[in-house]
Image 1: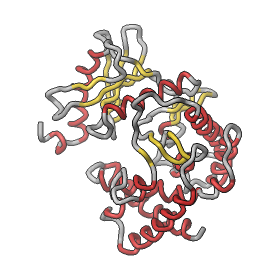
Image 2: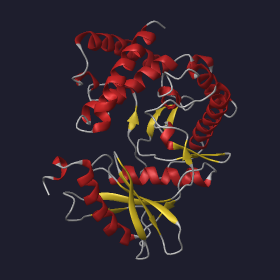
Image 3: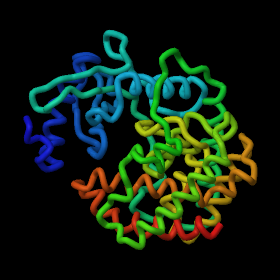
Image 4: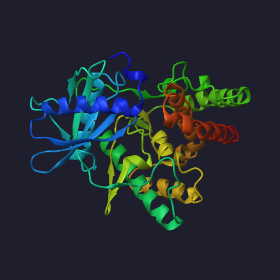
Length: 339
């Protein structure tokens, strides 16, 4: 099985399907119609039980999270759902565990697998395309997204973490330390010498500004960390939140910057930005001194995507998005340095 990672994404996905069929037995024998939905970081499959109810089975990528970290993710999702945030229900295995570790001859290592209830809804957009058609609708949508983020942070701050809860951090070390969580962005070959110099200068300023900003219960905590259009589903008036794979401890402003990052070139970006802050402030405090740091956190968010492209350089997604991320990071660095 050592050749697994040298195969095409289609061939890997076919092997993942073999593992998914075996993994489904941990939840019962009545599941059918198992089919691939997405294979990017994790492999996500759709399947149905004997009553026609739909589920999402996730086969996690190897060694992104420890078992304890995955357990924490699922515990948090479950707690948020009980508090009224529309997240997927976590379905325990027949033995009562929130996930299973499954081996299969088709895959070279054991994989963590969990099962979530399916949420009906349509993504509000995709990261590769412009989102808005008009400013009014864009403002209304991003007002709702802001409220959802504020409610998420409020309910999380009021939640008592279970014993042993552990999750990665999106702190200064993880973003601009020697070993960034998503990879050494400055090692990305697509960056030229002038871009590296510019980004390095902005990083020095970011270190100083993050130290001044500090980490308090008001501005830092457990965040989703992937508030992008693909992970926000609309179902009527409801806004649903999926994919907590990147969730961890970070600044609330990093959450809001993530929600805006892929809209930077949208003609209605200003409307979206203002509506996001307004919606957030309807449910949670957002001081002007925090919101004024948006250029800092947009720059930091962009660095993580450079690191992601560097560590996933073999994927078509990384290859296609690298030029945009490089151009955008240089622009954001200049804007941040000018603040």
